[in-house]
Image: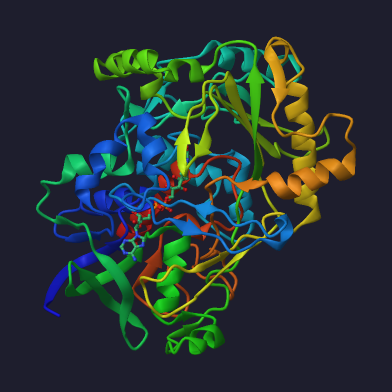
Length: 534
Ligand SMILES: Cc1cc2nc3c(=O)[nH]c(=O)nc-3n(C[C@H](O)[C@H](O)[C@H](O)COP(=O)(O)OP(=O)(O)OC[C@H]3O[C@@H](n4cnc5c(N)ncnc54)[C@H](O)[C@@H]3O)c2cc1C
């Protein structure tokens, strides 16, 4: 195999949400060189820019790693897809574009778990620095950052009804869930710009491609980190049949995401020593929690059939063509907005210490037909409800020492009875929303949901067959100050030198919200930690 050697001061692995921010911020410094390597390829980016095109990119092997979970014994042995972006921009290039930071209390909880420097007062400036929001630049929102955060340019009446029903059912109205308070119900905001997806690549890398000290390489599969003793020296990788030796003069930073960063650590000899030995991998550092603590948001996607038109009506060929032309002309259109129109963070019962449930409303419903996702000609809306702070933990396990072989994902999504109880209350809230006017008066049927009087056992049986992950795997390289943590609060990998992990695998506890904004924040924080290191 031909080979090539490349060298840079900082080598960042994975051009996803966190990696794009990190590489961009590091290369703002003069006198340092930054190499950002990515497995996905650049010519794929085009389609990702149309928001509605996620119907064609999620699950498509040209854009998605296409992981499939192991059977989950906590959900009747269910097996499902776990999409992850494999394209410049990473998962931010195929995600639903919902932009939400999580609650202040989430980061204060990280701090109280030993992660000094990650409390809300520490991370709020980073959230402000990253964004230019359609909101006044003030103590909570930013007006100067690369990431555009847009208000919805196109709103459906069903979504307005859902907000009104939430307020009538007792959820506080909130003008800005990324503002002073994160509790309540509100219009969603999106990582979009003028009707186009604004991925982390679009926001942080594309405008800086001409920087002489920033090199980006796509189509590169990183196989492992290389070491001199316990000091990371670079990477072994392949690109188009060429073996690449990549040398990092200062540091290697893994930003390959919650599935791939722990896999890369294991392939590099950092993990549970006996698991590594079983695959013939020499241990560099025995770190048993690598791949453990897999956290996901367990939730329900409930489709409601309505008596009024939903976005599904816009999918009829002539309407769709009309809406496409509107989008192409830069006008408000369903083609140019995020998946969810409404978000809510609520307490499932008044005694809850913090909002423990999240609602999304999609003013449309889709289904799989012959393996393809379609928008059927029915008036469907989708109500999503999920547990914010799951107690259940899954794990990742190496199947093979081959970097191209996917790691085994064991979700155990409903392992903890408290998560089942919280989700049961979530189901109760779905039924409440579906009977509270004005949204409730339009609901003909909640498809597949047991009737309200079905009883607890029937509801639990429903949850165990219907609960799904919400595309937010995290925690597999847990950050903490304790000896078992995979990374320390400065993101350095314990047991080795010159290696950090900086993506959502570091979560010590899940957050109340979708995870893209937090991944971007982690990229900002990593840059701060690296550039300010003594
Ligand atoms: C279908 C879907 C919908 C979602 N919807 C939303 C939403 O609406 N709002 C929201 O806030 N969050 C959403 N999320 C979650 C959010 O997008 C992710 O949590 C976030 O993007 C993760 O960022 P990251 O930096 O940790 O990893 P990623 O963005 O996944 O980046 C990892 C990158 O590393 C690359 N990589 C991995 N392994 C290698 C290797 N060996 N060699 C080279 N490169 C490698 C990958 O190709 C990828 O580009 C969604 C996620 C998905 C998958």
